[in-house]
Length: 393
Image 1 (cartoon, rainbow, N blue to C red):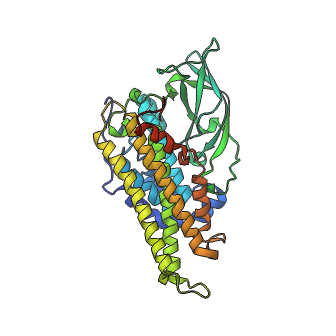
Image 2: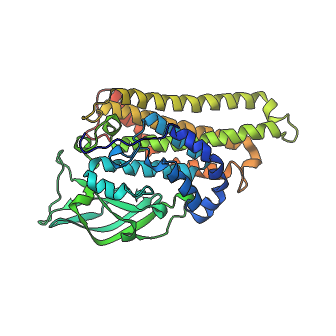
Image 3: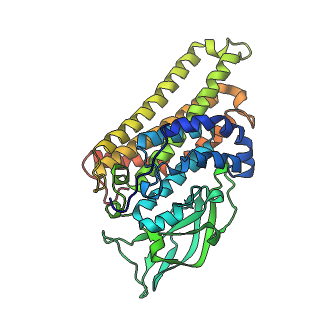
């Protein structure tokens, strides 16, 4: 590891810091939903607790915590509010790019203790190579957290001056990441989904933006990272799936908490109190076991891989498949628990402002995201059966 200075971190685990803020997060829920952004006072508290720096390299004053601790922290945030958990997950995931940049450039971007980077996934947009850098134009979607970001990014293939596409080490078109101040992007304000409204995952455009080479990087080659250590042996996409799974677990946990509180108080017409119903008792127990098992599987998987990860080489495809499987399994089971609790709550769940309605919309927004696709089971099965795909992120 080169050019790294160690930084002291708080003794309290990040999940404990989130629990300290849980009341504040819940109280801000209506404002987050309506204004589609995290309130300034909440952002102040989250930055003070260093919650946006959990996966940042220590070379830029990050905490580089273990993945299992990250799972618990994001889950706790989403338990209080889905949009907060999502924003926390995405901001930490984007910060992983710092491990692939020159330390002095990374410090410029993340040297601000309130630094947050937002971006959307790659698409068909392109950048043109020019002397010293690139000219970037195009439109990107789903820039979660862009309204409280300080920098943004875009991912595109590179068009060489002769019109050919630049190829990466595997012979495929290279996808680079270009970083720039948020003010350089034209944000479209078009985020109007059914759930996770507070993430403001809106679209943005760039028009012939010049980005110098130093402010670019790539997520495609984990071996090219500058920061060493087992955390950065996990590809960025692998930890991204872990964060989304943690959001799903947290939202489902919040719904189960709310249902258990309701069950103690509610006696449906013509029935016994919900908490005294044998079928409800069994359902609550199964939901508890389902969430606990999914979380344990996810945490155990990332912990085992972290413990044996190489300081230099990225984790191999079987290890990536194990994490992906644990993540999609967690999302699948979290959605199932949310559906069961929503149904069991009856009409108490259908009204805006109930403890169920927003969470139901939020988790079914998570369920439509790429990390939730059932095809991930097939891909992981290919790896388990000895026929891995050519590319596995």
